[in-house]
Every structure is written in C-alpha cells, then in structure tokens.
Image (cartoon, rainbow over all chains, first blue to last red; front, top):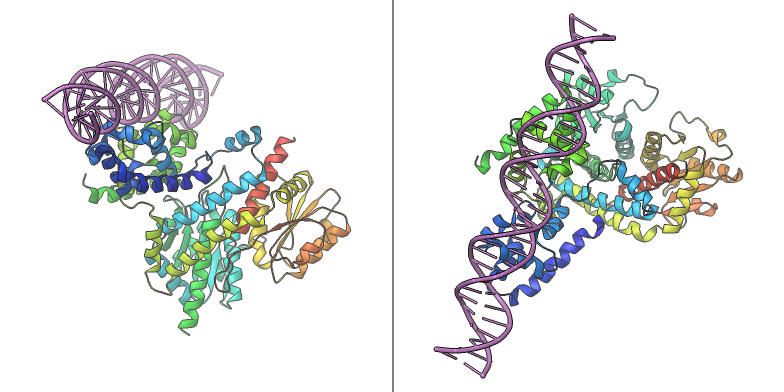
Length: 273
Length: 273
DNA sequence: CATAGAATGGAACAAATATTCCATTCCAGC
DNA sequence: GCTGGAATGGAATATTTGTTCCATTCTATG
C-alpha cells in the first residue's frame, strides 16, 4: 500500500497487459487496447465512459479488470489515480497514526521523503515553463548584482543560491540573513531580485519584491501556489509544487530548480563576456 | 464549453480565487488554500478526500464550490478534469521538451539536475544504514538542545534542520550562522551535535565536532566520502553520496535525509513525553 | 451582555457509479 | 447441424459519492 510501490505496480501491470493482450477474446482485447492507448484517461473517467470509448458494455470492462487481478474497476482506477497524484495527507494526524502503528521507523519515513522527492522532481517538468526559465536566466545574467530574498522555509534555498553564485564569482547579495536589518536600499539600478517564498508567504519577502517593482528592477519569483502574492507583480514566475509528507515539505525540487538557475546564469555570463 | 476555453475558464477561476481568498471566512479559506496548493488533485479526488485534506467537512467544500458559481463539487471537478487530462504527466516527454529548447539551454540543465536528483535519491537507500539512522534519531530525541553545524555548501541543510526543529518546538541552535562568532561554549552536557560537512571539509565544522567529542557529547555526522574527517570521531555517521552535474552538487538527497532525521526526532520526542 | 446574522458541522437524502447475475449468443469440436 | 463451454450484453442491485437542509455555534454590533 505504500506510495513507493504504486508506480512499480503500474509498471508490472503494463507489462502483463502487453504480453497477454494477444491471447484475449475480442471484447477484452478491446479493453486492453484502450488502456494501453489512453492510460491517463482512466484516472478521471467512469467505467461507463471508458466502456463506451472501447466500444464494449460496462460489464465487459469490469470483467477485464477482474481478469487482471483487481476486485473491479474501482480498484484498478485507484492504481492509476495514485500514480498521478500520490499520497495525500496534509495533516499531522498521519504522523500520529504512523507512530501508533509502530511503523514510524526512521527508515520508513526516509523512504517516504525519498518518494516524495522523486515525485516533486517529476512534477517540476510540468510546472516549470521553459520560456520562463530562459527569461529568468536572462534577467539574472544581465543583472549587475543579484539580490536574493527568501526567509523561513525558503531560506535554505536562498542561501544555497548565494553560495553558488559567490563560488562562480558573480556579485550576489543575500538579504535579511541577519539581525532584521533593513536592506532595501541596497537595491540599485541595473540589479535584479530573486524572490523565493512559499505559503504562508513571509511579508518581508513580498515587501522587498514590491520595493524592487517600484524601482522597476526585474524580478524572478520562485513560488508555489497560484494564489501567491508574488504572482501579482510582473516578474518572471517559476512555479514549484513540492509534494509534502505529513505537514513537512522537503525542498528537493526547489533546490534542483535553484541550482539550474544559478548554474545557467553562470554559463551565460561567461559566454557573453 | 469547448475544450479550448476550458483552460481560460480555469485561469479566470484562479484569479478570482487569489483575489477573494483573503476575505473568505475561515473554513472556506481553507478550501481555497487547498485548491490553490494542489489543483491537480481535484481531478482525481472525491469531495470527502479533498475535504479531509482541507480539514473541513464535505458540506463546507460544496458550499465553497457554489460560492464560486458552480452548481456543486461535481461541476467544479469537471472543469479541472478537462483542463488537466490532456496534458498529463508523461514525464519522459516533458523532459524532452525541456531539453529540446537547445543544447545548453537552462531547460536542458534543469533536466540534468532533475535526473541527478532522482539518481541521488535512489542511491540514498543504499548508503544510509537503517541502524545508524535509528541511532541518530535516538541521540537527537534524547538531547536537551540539538546543536547544528554546517557551513558553505552544507549550510542550507543546517538552516533547514534548524528551521524545522524550531517549528516542532524542539530546542535547537544553528552554529556559526553569523559574524564568525565562536559558539563552542554553547555546547553543554546533555546536548547533542549534528555536524554536516562535505569535501572539502570546512575546518570550523570539524573543530566544533572535536570539541563536542572532548566534552563527550554524542555526535551525528552527515557526510560524504569514506575519508571524511568526521568519520574519525566516534559519532553516528550517515553517508550521502550526491551525484554531481559538472562541478555542481545539488543537495537533493541530503535534504531528504535531513528532513527524515528531524521529523523522526520530532515524533519520537512526542512519543516519549 | 444581548441579539441578529453569518458560518459551521453533521446527518438525512438523492444521484451517480460500479458490480453482479443471468438469459442469450457465439463458436469449436463432434 | 447439434452440443457444451466460453463469451457477451443488459438489466437489477449494491455501493459509493455528492448535495441539501437544519440545528447549533460563532462573531460582530449595538
């Protein structure tokens, strides 16, 4: 039942499908063909719809599912749904539950975070627009100094970017790292701001971004939901949707994105020197 | 109702969501947040599941849908299904798209980091010893204050751990974050040290670890190679081997490990309270 | 501190969806 | 062409899921 083996179970299913569909009777073969042809529709369709698309009666489709070892259509659908949007729980209760069942060995938890990480990375391909990414690198490559703002959960990302830029000898400034010192006046013409913020959005990040906007500096925003206040500014927005485990959200995908961003910036700067 | 304008209708919906979510009453705001955070889940979930994730009763979720002009949940779901079904995960294709934007494009680089990340995560399972992990959690759960040391590249990980521990209300101290101030005297009996360091090993981290050793405090070390100086101390060692892209090493796996460590510590503390 | 109006939670009800069952059809082998 | 077993379609049933309604709880206001 763990999230970890859901994708592999799907793999196995597809392999069996390929092997056996040859020897299946007519109607069932039609079902198999449809599943092979449009697996993504299974997650969001009813048996009736699928059956119609395969030109078989619903009962035939259910028989097909049972032939492959599922109790019925619903069970098979569950497999496909989880492959798309796996494991839920947004609430700490889950952790409680795990603990009470004695299954919260650190190893099990690590496995979950690994799985969540893999999923986040996979989704990154969907949420990041290549053009926006390109635009962002452009902005950063042209900036004199790159300002970086990210607090609380976003801070590790911000500090990593600052560190890597420094290593590449690119002028960068990590904001608000210390002592609550206002640093907005460091924003100067010709600079650019990278603002990183996730729900719940830290006001300081938003304020700095607004300040940058007032001064007409280009902004690159790394954020999550569609309601993010960073979206209201007219900067280049890169969306990351981390998959969370319990109430915790690892930064796996965000860091991959951040790394790509700074390294690209580095190579582009060298290229145009 | 054509498929063509479905995305735009979704756009409109999201904009309204962003605008109005501020002024919504508590429960409905929870719904709005969830929808903003995980829109793709709507396509494959029942009201009950969604409501649970948003921590509201199903009826509240239905009210939310109606507030935004839908007849109920089903109608809203239809919108999401249409918008998300056509462009499905299809991970390999997506990655191709990113790559095809040009050989040295940011997209191609991102794709590489994503691959590297996945690889690192996969290897994590091999390099981390479950017993060591368990031991590490034990040490951290028993400590009065958890000290965390990690500089340069390891700093993002250290700061993330400190942040998460703080969120869970566990006493933690992030060392050397600022001003080169010596903080070794903060190490007190009953505490534990988590030292994070990768090649080339920052002397400050090693020194602090040695200091901890002298004072007979338990040490948890997160490090990479087998020649790491952290290995010479008798602490609990967790090995991470990140796959690097060119000269750059993303922290994907390390962060997953760090998160698991911290969250496990949290649950174990609660359990033994 | 009382009150009205809004917000909320839950349980009863309605609709949709999946599953089972059985009468009918098909087809291979005699 | 007959016969038995497999395959099929559809209608009846069971189950899940969505929606409505109302009693109760909040909250802002006088």
